[in-house]
Amino acid sequence: MDMFLMTASLALAGIIAGIYVSGVIHDFRIDDLTAGQYMAMHQMRDRTFTRVMPVVRLTTLVLIAATAMFAVDAGLPRILTIVAAALVVIDIGFTVSRQVPLNKQVQSWTPVTIPDDWAQTRDSWAANHNLRLVLGLAEYACLFAAVILTLSR
Image (cartoon, rainbow, N blue to C red; front, side, top):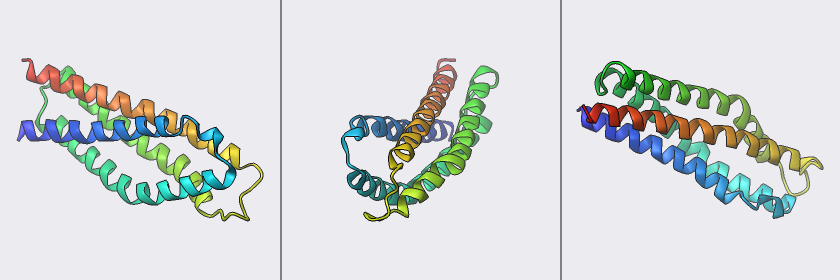
């Protein structure tokens, strides 16, 4: 059971980190898009992630919490795993308070109602995503270190 919890939590945390990195790669030249192109891309992407991310994120949190309680060694490995879980909670809170409102704003746009300041929304979303990237990578690094420390005993 310990190995399952560590493997599953690492796998999902890695998927999250990968999704966050892929967003940065995908959006590298996003400034080249017109307002209409950006709107269409963001709306399409958001429709997918609105369904997927809550389930994946909450499952990751549950698995990391279970890993902290039942799978990793006491001491530094457990502390690192608890930090990873806290980073997930921070990411979820930040996403709900900052990214979701921006996503809803973009979802409400139509080709004729895109606001003149649409690029500010795009740039705010990107800045927020970069913070989420840092949270996701730190989460994965903490969890990875905790598992390595536990397995190397």
